[in-house]
Length: 290
Ligand SMILES: [Fe+2]
Image 1 (cartoon, rainbow, N blue to C red):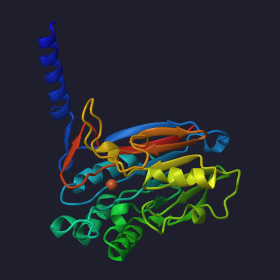
Image 2 (image 1 turned 45 degrees about the vertical axis):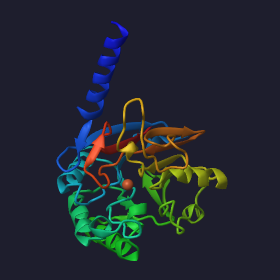
Image 3 (image 1 turned 90 degrees about the vertical axis):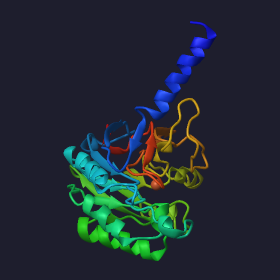
Image 4 (image 1 turned 180 degrees about the horizontal axis):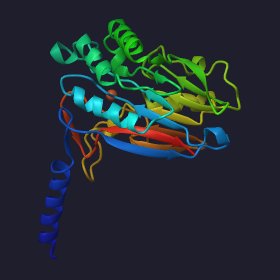
């Protein structure tokens, strides 16, 4: 193969990878089920095999269909998780930053999101935290999201607090914080009263919370996050044009290790502004502790 042919085939492969199979429309598509075994240090025998269903970044809006969110909920339920967690951005309305019909907060999308998630049930409960977009239309959207999802699905909100859960007689703690970019985010409050020896799982929409964990020297075993959308638009060789994280690409997606602490970042379900994902499928995640 000469140089000219090599360039021709490389260009063709790039175009196919970028605009061919990798293109995904969030108004019609299906979600991928991602199973993630996570090895946790000193995990008690009773917690081995504990299954956590994780959904994030639903972004119920005119570019994300009811069916897409519903298919994510169906996949989670098919795995029979012990506990289900939701890590924020239920809607996209953002009156704080976007004007006109794109930024407008519309309660119909909160109701649509809640209806699409209505089948979620788990023996240890369904827990949630809020993302940046949930805050960006002010108290009106926060109140609507918290009220609707707790009334219709029984979501228990972890707004800078923790709960103690038990499996096989052994306790572990589930913690949650408000979105990292909000002044109300408090890891200190979320960690209040924790038993030093129990397993701790933190729900934080934004994986940048790792910065606070390092500063406070809290021992957290696992952080569950979304926010990055896995890059949403991933261009082969060039990467992700937009990455809303102070750590750049580090917490883009997947399992990231910081010493004994691990963070799993889901690509999420929905998307923003246009119904497009590129080489970055929507995801419903089931974490199994090992
Ligand atoms: Fe998001």
